[in-house]
Amino acid sequence: MLEQATILGPGLLGASLMQALREHALAKRLTTWSRRPETRLKCEGQSWCDAVFASPEEAVTGADLVVVCSPVEHIVPLLERIAPSLSPGCLVTDVGSTKSLICRQGAAVMPTGTHFVGSHPMVGSEKTGLENAFPELFQGGACFVTPLPETDAAAVEKIMRMWKALGMELTSASPEGHDEIVAHISHLPHFLASTLSAYLAGKDPDWRNVAGAGLRDTTRVAAGDPAMWKAIASHNREEILRAIDGFEGELQRLRSALHNQRWLELINLLERGKEYRDSLRKR
Amino acid sequence: MLEQATILGPGLLGASLMQALREHALAKRLTTWSRRPETRLKCEGQSWCDAVFASPEEAVTGADLVVVCSPVEHIVPLLERIAPSLSPGCLVTDVGSTKSLICRQGAAVMPTGTHFVGSHPMVGSEKTGLENAFPELFQGGACFVTPLPETDAAAVEKIMRMWKALGMELTSASPEGHDEIVAHISHLPHFLASTLSAYLAGKDPDWRNVAGAGLRDTTRVAAGDPAMWKAIASHNREEILRAIDGFEGELQRLRSALHNQRWLELINLLERGKEYRDSLRKR
Image (cartoon, rainbow over all chains, first blue to last red; front, side, top):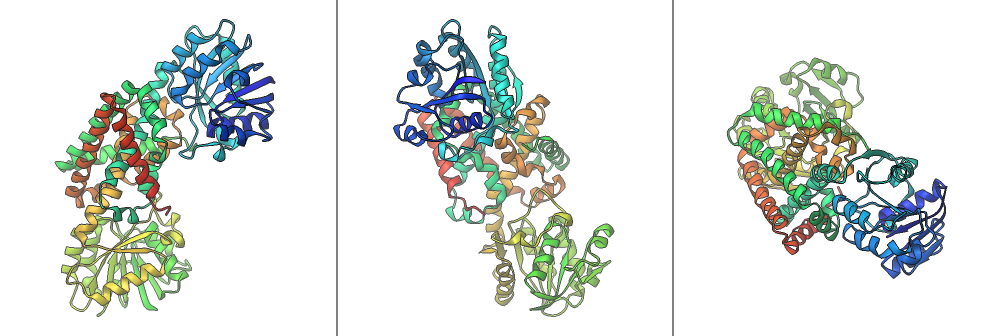
């Protein structure tokens, strides 16, 4: 059991993590800090929060585990800010959706005797904020842990153990490997949903009244926070561009099969798509 | 109340419609025919089915309403086949996902004194077949009715009343107007989901193990029946090609904003997408 776990940024993921750590009794003491005074106020007196601090430096003091749950663009600046206040032996991780930049720069700013190990629990929702937090958010979800070759093996092991204790299925990958994978299975679907929604926004507004469940599901993630996704895009720009180009090639194949009425080719593409979709795990 | 309603093709939509018509007591007698003997067998003795016939001609005999729920490519051939057996005054509709071809050819084959009015209830699921049918399928869904200028107004009114009685929200459109709309809000999302799935199928198979809810939702419709979607594509080819081209233009704008790091432009696109998605009705 941890003496003190500190979660920086108690939004949907951060607050859910505090609730889950409490429910699984993984830490004696849970502390937090939020950039926003109103969020700090909401944490006061919650059963899953033992202390709220006005600065991240105070919040991490005495922690043996720190989890940075801030938006991706704030993670490295926060790591720089808390570094001098970390106790010796402290483990630090994050939940950012991109890993190359964060892991390289994160490792560089950590003081000797502390360890940064990147994480990316693949859970969340287009609904953000502490209000939507719930302790089962991590249960059954997939989670990346992305150590560098030089990262302390015992630190990696401990971080993995924590996510596993919350019910997550773990995958270890290099930060670069992670970024290639999520560019395809998470960022590309997101930007396609946003593009489809933005395209349809330019059409007759009445059309939306007849949209069915298909359009709603296909575009669900487009309801996500634009600022958050802009930050993800800027961190993982090159991999996302590569994924878009690969997708475009496939779309051109479909377009050409349809245009030229090559129906067997179209059916073959639809069948490959169906087989892949049917093979995805349920959660 | 109808004396006899006949549903041809008791699959997900057809069987759900029979169940709904029974539940709402809209027809005294419900008859059906299916191409497949095993489906006919499954209908025998169901509380929502009074008689199953081995031929569509027998099934429609004596009907004052016929709803053709077969796959789009079978609808016109079926209308031709049943035309000589229809009673005077019989109303005929269908539930096909495309309307231009079906409505033009459908009207042409109807005998004098009977009426064809195209319908498209925008409900359904990637789960097909009688086994997945349920009477509430239509409740709260959107439904197109697509009369031609010369279609009998009283017949249109009666068809609209039936769908309304099942809880549907009705939209009247020309068959061509319908096909343009669904190319954008239904067929395009479907083919994008299939293309994304087919593209990812060519990547590392392990990647699917870390996919989250975003990918699952974005690709859900790709699990649909390839043969059914090939038929829809062939009926609505030109409108779907136009929708794909429009989408491609928007995707190129996103790609270019990302490539050139024009972040305000990217955020603007994401915001337009979010606003549109947030404006979609819940069901």
